[in-house]
Structures are given as C-alpha cells and as structure tokens.
Length: 413
Image (cartoon, rainbow, N blue to C red; front, side, top):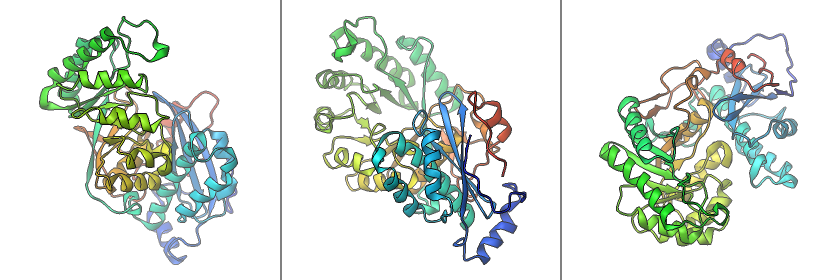
C-alpha cells in the first residue's frame, strides 16, 4: 500500500455506510463540496486473474473514492509520486487535477504508458468521491444516462485453446448456462503449422486452422450470440488481409487487433480491405490524441479503448464523442476488477455509441466478492446503479485475502 495520509483529524471514525446523511449535509453547508480537500492517496494490488491496482482518494469530509489502474500498468510507485500533486486540492476539480498530473509528469512520458494508467486510476477514484460529495451517480458527471444497463461480452478460454471443437463447446456452454449473448475467443493460438512466428506471416495452413475455429464457434452458437475473435497484434499486414478475407463468409462480430498497433496508416489499409468483417482496435492506444488518427482516417470499424488504461472516465468520454462524429461504436476493452468494470459501465451508460463492455473474469469465482454489492452482471448485462459515485463498496476483508504478496491493506474509511 502507498499512503500519503495528512488527515486533519486522524481520530475521526467514518464508514462508507454511515456518511450518507451526516456528511452529505456537511458538504452541502460547506458550499456544495467546494471546501472539501484531498488528504491522502493509497494503493493496494490484488492478485486476480490479472494484478489489479486499486486506488483510493481520501478527503477531509470522510468520503473516500475508489478507482483502478490498468493491470501491470499504473505502478503504485508512480501514483505515490503523483499524490503530492493533488493532496490539498478539491476533488471536484477533476479536469484541472487531471491536466495538472499530466503536466507534472510530462518529463516522464505522460502521453502514454504507465503514467497514463496511473493517472487513470486516480481519475476514476476522483469520479467516485465527487459523486459521493454531490450525491449523484458517476454517469451523471460524464453527461447523464442513455441506458440503464450496458451489454457485457465475455472473453472465453479453454484448456485446449487451439481446438476448434473445444472452443465451440465452451461458447455454447457460456451462452446457455451463463446467459451471455456476446462472447470472444483468441485467434492468435498455435496451429501446429508455424515455421517462424517472429515474422508474423501466416501460411495457408495456419489461416485454415483459424478459419476452422471461427467456423466451429459461429456455427455452434448460431444467432444466440455475437462472436468476436482477438488476434493480439500478431500478424503482418498481408496476412491480416488474407485472414479477414478468409472469414468473410462467417457471422463474425469483429476481428480484434490483427496487426501491431503503431502504424495507423497500415491499420487503415487492413481495415478497409475487409468489406464485411468489422475490425476492432484501440486498447493499446492512449488518450484522445492517440485515438484521433484511427478515428479520423477511418482506420477502425469499432473502437476499443481500455478505460483504466487510456486516461480514465472523462478521457474515454472524449474519445467516444470524437468517434461518434464518424459514426463509430465503442466496445470497451476491460480486464479489470469490479471497480474498473463499473467505471466502464458508467461511461458506457452515458455515451450514445456504446456497443459493449468486456468481462474477462468469468472463471474467477470470487470476482464479485471484491465488493459488497451482488448481481453485478446478470444475463450478459451490467446494471448501472443509482447510488452516488461508482455505486460499489469494497469488501476490505476480501481485498486483504487476495492481495499480492507484500502489499498492505488500505486504511479503513
């Protein structure tokens, strides 16, 4: 845990449940929250199916906001360095504090990478605490609500990920037993025909194997669910074009990240080579500036920003607004705990072009236990709560049980 605690009254006792009336009344008499100050920033890393970096922002009003930084990205040490930049500031000034952190960290690469992921975690926590101060859900802070729930697509895996029949069976099971109507499988799996994976070239037998997976899953699932396939930036441009052409006859929701993410000009050519199969990219691109060329050059059919990585809730809203000008839907990439997932859902509720939010933890039995609320995802949908902030309360006992070795628990508040 990283802590920069400077509480004016360290003996004060608060709980998240006890604050609703007393504290809200106090902030109302203090200018609607204009006198509230940030007193501390803390982090704890949880060992989920990814290492989740949870971030908490404390205030002198006793209200605490919780956020999440992208796994393996927003290191606790970076958040520790940034904490002094926002302590003593008003947590309602989210845009100003965001830009302040960007500017203060500009010498260390604050346009992308770990710094942006770290800032994202703090920014999400600011939305959570600001919602509690103002007594409104977080979606209200990013524009209001288009929908009461967001569609969730489930990222699936099998023990034999290269076996088309195993993939088909798992797809049918998740659709029938768990109720999802949108799923995704990896397509960058070994085929047994590789000669040299480093050159990114797909030989015909390799493409044939990937087509077998696509065919098996889409035909088994039928019209009961949309099916996407992820390539994890694995192939050359020519191979990606050949793969997209080979799956044209199947009902593919999208092909994700078929080529490396750096060259947007090549991405445009690959995307526009496929008249029927949508191409999705965006998880490996940071902030609105990074996504801009993908959008304006029409190099993407569906944009997939990762909210705890790309810059946070307001930055994702800005990306979605730009994409909407080009009639591009948003399918948020997401490998987060319930905290980051709910932040994505809150933004997904507030933007018109939201297509879906990813869920990556269907095999992790305690994912939902990390918070006190139940039934977060039901029948492939995530309801957006009306409670202030993100609407979630960390279960600190579960957090402590699953912390990465060497971590310490947040201070209770």
